[in-house]
Image (cartoon, rainbow, N blue to C red; front, side, top):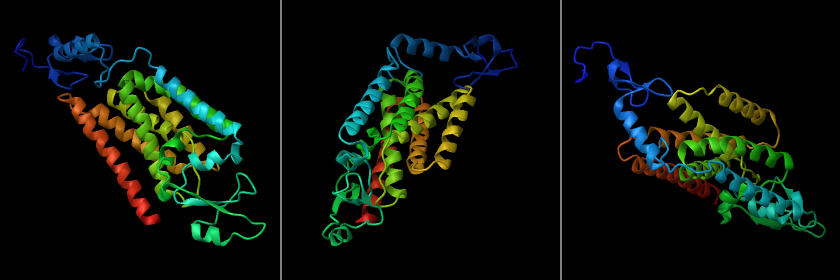
Length: 304
């Protein structure tokens, strides 16, 4: 019962905290009505430069995405400048679970059916030189990260960076720079972990698609949480899913892992209790990271 208007019998629900308050106490907001305490809290967040989910409000929400785009573009130009598909850096930066058997006399070529260093070396004969390139299980753990920034084909990098340009600033505006970076990087890692577990031991994967799908997942969760119109986002996701399942040489594992990771992180950040929100968000993010590390460790134990 409202202490200001005890005679009121009809109540309406606050759009933020969902408490039932009498209509006379409600304050019109951008969407629906909010109770006085939520309006006061929102004003305090605005004065303190905080986003609705506790992050520091970015002066330029597009800046982080621009830096990430520049980093991906630089790595792409470096790979293209050192030979493209035949560049030795593709094997160093791309994610390969166990490793692959290279053909040094044919730059960029490898033996896809050979998934063992011993078999690779045993096949070394005159005129058929072979060289084993280690993967994540062989100690090249950084491939889980570097593969997120490596591209070889122009259309691949162009599509990923265009998607980052459209999706990144929107999410940073909602979450703040630090939380946006957490979603991007950790979604990319969940995509890498899915590739590491679900793809063949000698398959090679690279690209920022896992992180991009993570942004889609996080934006979808936040949009549903706030009751926003997510029809365009769902159309974008549906189009990308169609391309994933119908195209060739596309890592559905990375896309699936990145999307799930982004959705989980979006839920952690958006649904964390307001009381000690930052602490709860840190705990949730840490649990996702622990799950990724555990998945990688389990797959490594299987491979070696």
